[in-house]
Amino acid sequence: MTDDRVVLVTGGARRIGAAIVQTLHEAGMRVGVHYRGSKNEAQALAHDLNHNRDGSVCSFQADLSDPGAPEHLVTQVVEHFGRLDAVVNNASAFYPTPLGSVTEAQWEELFATNLKAPFFLAQASAAALVVHDGCIINITDVHADQPMRNHAVYSMAKAGLVMMTRSLARELGPAIRVNAVAPGAILWPEVPMPENVKNAIVRRTSLRRQGTPEEIAKAVLFLIRDATYTTGEVIRVDGGRHLYM
Ligand SMILES: NC(=O)c1ccc[n+]([C@@H]2O[C@H](COP(=O)([O-])OP(=O)(O)OC[C@H]3O[C@@H](n4cnc5c(N)ncnc54)[C@H](OP(=O)(O)O)[C@@H]3O)[C@@H](O)[C@H]2O)c1
Image 1 (spheres, helix red, strand yellow):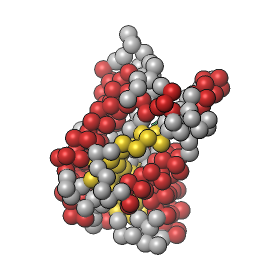
Image 2: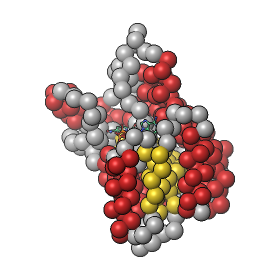
Image 3: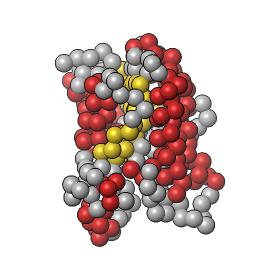
Image 4: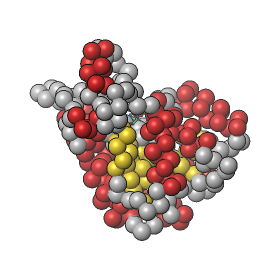
């Protein structure tokens, strides 16, 4: 099945972002894969998917905390594909910020990637999205509602992203829908994490397991392709984790 829609996925080279890219591509869409440092992974993913459908994927590099980078990224994607139908704000910095030792640089990086860049990507892409009744999907976190211990700055930035989802759903309607997916425990951070901590998190879900990147990607596909009367909404994909927080 083909679908001539073009979707930009930020942080699309690896982990959850790569699963979103693969799922949208499998559904027939063309995809702009944004990456910051994962050039090899982004190019390998684009190469594999283009092997199935020539010219359907292109990778774009940007550090989204650089001033002007979101606007430049949108311009590049629209110039390359000639249209833009959806933006998936998935790229994110994530690390602990224990109170007492938080630096301004940490605040700026966490807010830039999780809130500021999604806002300016949305603003820059609105003119293109409106042409084809497009949409924006923000990847938030169950911890946007319930604070994560030692992660105040990240949790605050994700809470802002939820409010952005609702605000822009009003501002950009009726032509553009704006929704969010809030993952629970899907992939552990790449820094080592004790097994007992992981097990305790999984025990505090109704479904007693981690989710998969593909389960996040399926929710994104639903919101882009099928949820035509849904806007300003956050779908939790967390196995019921929020019931235990
Ligand atoms: N993993 C989970 O279980 C989980 C749980 C709750 C919410 N989430 C949310 O789901 C999304 C994906 O999670 P994930 O664990 O797959 O993410 P991740 O691996 O921590 O980060 C995704 C990508 O963000 C990009 N990135 C970081 N800083 C950037 C910057 N300054 N400019 C541009 N790109 C930047 C990186 O790209 P490069 O590699 O190219 O540098 C990275 O690959 C995130 O929004 C996260 O907050 C994840």
